[in-house]
Length: 80
Image (tube, rainbow, N blue to C red):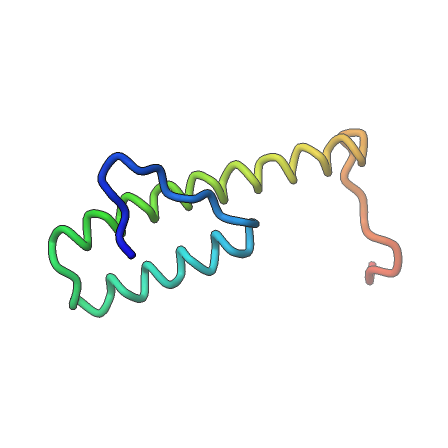
């Protein structure tokens, strides 16, 4: 089912879902079998997914910095 031009695409369910969809879009575009219109739609969706992934990673990094109080240290059990 295709979406109308004014329909907002559904947001990904998770970071992993967004990454998987992005990988699928890239593979589809690499085949060279998409029409120009399909390629543009895929690029637009890919850009939105990339933005979602970047935001999720930035939020995770911020949470880690808060949890570690801004001090990075070796994980327990890591080789020295």
